[in-house]
Length: 166
Ligand SMILES: [Fe+2]
Ligand SMILES: [Fe+2]
Image 1 (tube, rainbow, N blue to C red):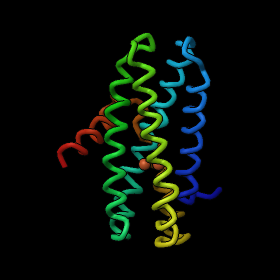
Image 2: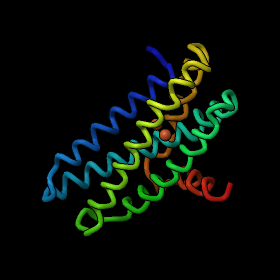
Image 3: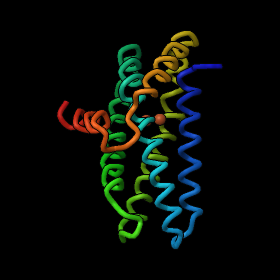
């Protein structure tokens, strides 16, 4: 099985995009379905931003100074997503702002994933090469095992706090 870091991250993106689409297709009155899909979104996003923040971004920043600005912007976009995820986790699908907040989360994460895939992952592939991407991917799979799955778990909160104070 390939552990290429970019392949793994793009697979995650694909799964996330699918849940976004399902949410949009669920229809305004399907509260239970919307609630279930948002739970799924929060889990996927919490795990995904964790492995990028903890493993991929720091390593890329260290090895490829040229993409440092993209990495810094990405940390900030993750932070915005973290805030929305935490708020959504505390909300009920009946809340009048639930769909609006989810829509903003979807729009901002789609934009973020597009930028990663189109603007700087290709430079990472070029700069790191096959072997380093395989190693990075293996480390991400390991990190995935211990990753938080809910925005309220301590390691997810730590990530959110680090983004504010560091
Ligand atoms: Fe990201
Ligand atoms: Fe990503």
